[in-house]
Length: 278
Image (cartoon, rainbow, N blue to C red; front, side):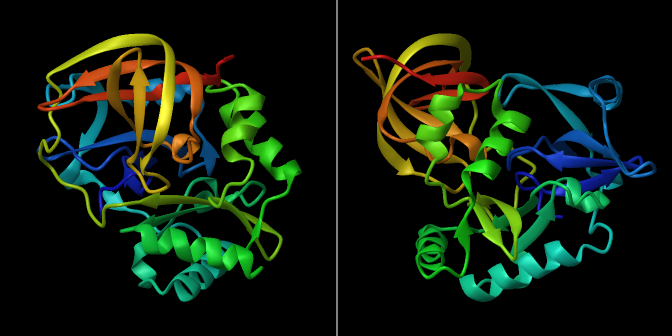
C-alpha cells in the first residue's frame, strides 16, 4: 500500500479511501466509502457507524483511522474501461503502470459515473504533458454537461456554481477518453508515512475574505497557493482536487487557519469558497 491521498484499501469488508500522506504510527487515516459485500456506496448512517475517531495531536484533529496491520490493498473487480484509461495515461505520460491507481465507485463495478484515477509522484512534467495531450486531442476536456453533472452531484455544498465554473471551466483534471469521463487526482508523493511530518501548533476557525495572489504548487496534491488576508500572508493548502486549480482573485471562504513552525496555512478542505464582489 502507498498510503497516499485517495488510495483504496480494504478493512473489515469495507472499502476505505486514504486521506492525506502522513498518518499516526501503526494507523491509516481513511474514510469508509463502499460496502464490498453489497457493492454499494455507504449511507451517511453507515459511514458514521464504521468510523473510529482518533485525536492526533500532530494535526490537532480527530481523524478516522484504521489499523495498518489489518488493512489490505484493493484492486477492484474487472474494470476494462478503467484499465484501458490507466494504460493509455501511463503510456502517453511516460509513467510506470503502478504509479496510476484506480479509485472511486468504478472499483465496485459502478461505471455510470466518472472513472477516478490517482497519479502518484506527479510533478510539473506530468502537468505539462497533460496540457500537450489535450492540445493534441489525445484526450479532450469534458463537455459543459459533464462539468455541471460533476458540480451538482459532488460539489454544490463547497462552492456556488459561478465560482466552480470560474475555477474549473478550463480544467485539465477532468478529461474525456473513448467517451468516458476521467477524473484525475494528481498526488505529489509516491508513498505516505507513519509519522508526523508537518506538525500543527495551533488551529482556529476562520471566515472572511481572502485574496489568492498566485499559485505555488497547483494541480498536484497537496496544492499550495499564496494568499493574503488583510495585511497578512498565508499559504492556502488543499488535498482536494476541487481546489487544486484555484485562480487569482478575491474569495469569501470558511475554513481553518493552522499555525505551523514558521508559517501559517489556510485550510478550506472542509469549508466553503465563493467569489467575492470587488
